[in-house]
Length: 234
Ligand code: HEM
Ligand code: HEM
Image 1 (spheres, helix red, strand yellow):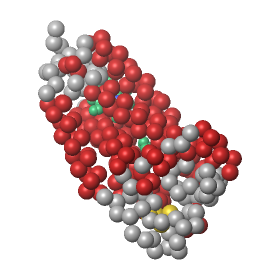
Image 2 (cartoon, protein in one colour):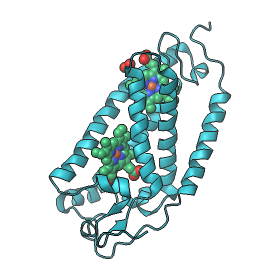
Image 3 (spheres, helix red, strand yellow):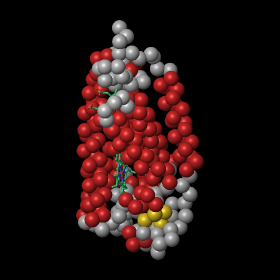
Image 4 (cartoon, rainbow, N blue to C red):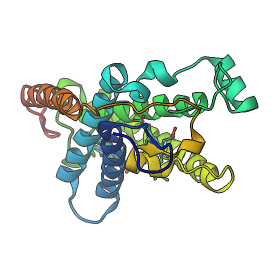
C-alpha cells in the first residue's frame, strides 16, 4: 500500500509490527507477573508462551516474510557495519531502508535471548510449588541450574532492552530520525529513503498467522505430552 505522505513507502509488514509490540507486552507481562504481589504464576507462563511463540514466529518470518523482514535483507558482516558507522550507508552508498547492520545484531541477539529465556522457563521451578510445564523431563538439580540461568539471562535481556530503547531515542532526538513511528504505521517518509525505494507489497498476514498457529500447536502438543511435574515427587 503506498503511503499518503510525499514519497512515503511501506517498509514494515503488519506481522513484524504486531510481533514487535506483542513482544513488548509479553516481556513486560513476564516481568510484572514475577514482581507483583500475589500468585500470578499462571499468567507468567501465559506471557512466557507468548514470548516463545512470537520470537519463534519472527525467526521463521525472517526467512519467508516480506523484503525488510528477512534476515538476508539486514544481517551483514563486519565491513558493512563499519561502513554504516562511518558513512551511514550500504555498499551502494545508499541510505538503508530496513534495519541497519548494527541494529541487526541487536535484533538477532534479542530474538535469540528471548527464545532461550522462555525455553529455560519451561524447565524452571520456584523452590516452593510452581514449576514450568516441562519440569518433569529434567532432574531437580538440572531444573535448579536452568532456573538460575533463567534469572541471570533476564538481567542481560533487560540490559539489551535498555540499549535498544536508548538507541531508538538517540535516533529520534540526536539524528532526528523517527524509527519508532514506522514500527507503528509500517511507513517511512520519502526523505529517509534512497531514491527509487519501493513499497514492500502485501503483508501476507495470513501466512504469518498460519506459522504462529502451527508453532502454537507444536508447543501445545509438547506441553500436553510432558511427564507429570511435581516438586514433591520423589
Ligand atoms: C520489551 C521491550 C522490547 C523488545 C524485546 C524489543 C525487540 C525488538 C525487536 C526484536 C526488533 C526487531 C523487529 C523486527 O524486525 O521484527 C525491534 C525493533 C525496533 N524496536 Fe523494539 N523492542 C522493545 C521495546 C521497544 C520500545 C519501547 C521501542 C520504542 C521506544 C522500540 C523501538 C523499536 C524500533 C524503532 C525498532 C526498529 C528499529 C529499526 O528501524 O531498525 N522497541 N525491537
Ligand atoms: C513459558 C515460559 C516461562 C516459564 C514456564 C517460566 C517459569 C518461571 C519460574 C518457574 C520462575 C521461578 C523462579 C523463581 O522465582 O525462583 C520464573 C522466574 C522468572 N521469570 Fe520466568 N518463565 C517463563 C518465561 C519467562 C520470560 C519470557 C521472561 C522474561 C522475558 C521471564 C522472566 C522471569 C523473571 C524476571 C523471573 C523472576 C526471577 C527472579 O525472581 O529473580 N520468564 N519463571
